[in-house]
Image 1 (tube, rainbow, N blue to C red):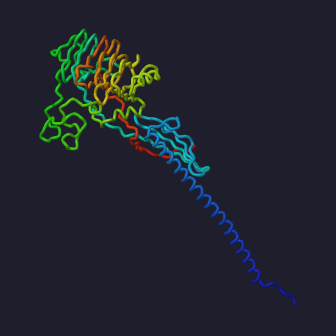
Image 2 (cartoon, helix red, strand yellow; image 1 turned 90 degrees about the horizontal axis):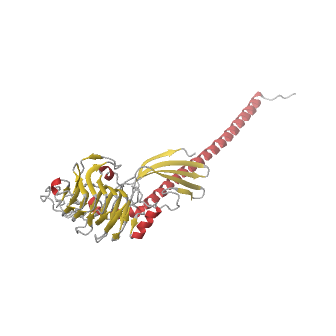
Image 3 (spheres, rainbow, N blue to C red; image 1 turned 60 degrees about the vertical axis):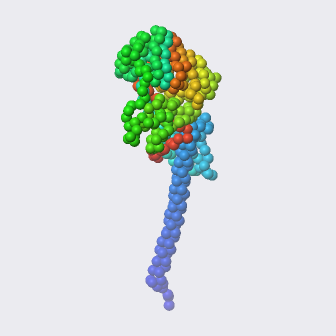
Length: 405
């Protein structure tokens, strides 16, 4: 008798085949998915590490700015490709922007993954208080000689025209003598040859007290103008009567600030030879936008150069003993001069901005020895370089990710 296959057995075999195919397909596609997940996880890890590398580059760039030291000679804050870990690196380009501002672009890389970030950092500035009484403000006696012209009217930034009434031509806590053929102007009046007190262009025996109780402690003008909290109320020089004790005090900034800023700029000099070498290296002139600090007793001659600096500078000639003397001044200067004493501003010299002299002595306060010009300019004084210290903070003002290519 012939035997035939059962329909049920055939159906079972077919179902087993179908189930086997389904299991194989699931295993195959599961393996593909697992491989993609692992690959994706690896790429995510590498991308994250690339971002960490870019941020490390920013941190190292900010450190270079903080120290004000260009370690590689490629520009402050800019860093060459630097390894990070086994397969990572960062490369940084820092570009100076506005005053005390840098844009830092840092590219981080991990294997083939790359990410780039851009941050803007801006250094905190020390505020400067400017309160000028005159084109020349002096603690001691002032004598003008030769044909010097001292003009307290307000001249524009380019030294081309008078734009306001301005201030006194000269203000001194002591005497003022306008000799020779010298002229003094101020308070809206053009320079007057051999001016006298009745011409209202200078202020002799200037009183630095104002009779006002600024700190409301019942004692007006009780503090010395010395950068110290004399009355212990947590405020410094808020109710003063004296002439400022020195350059930092005059600007109402912490003691030593001007010297520190000059040191960070490479413009702090302890000898005439250092100053002369710097000027020679800069084409015979003193570049603008700087804080210069001359920490030696006699600067003779003081030559600013034949061309006036485009942007204003601050030049301090001061010693801890207060006996620095600047003599035989030549050239063109735009900005603020703060000196212990100054003697003989020679012919063809122009100083646009203001001069402050701290010595109480008559020695070192003889201005003029020819046809020199000193002119007050509020615009110039408003553009003085900011007080930024090496080692100061560079906080991040903005952060964003930009294309890596």
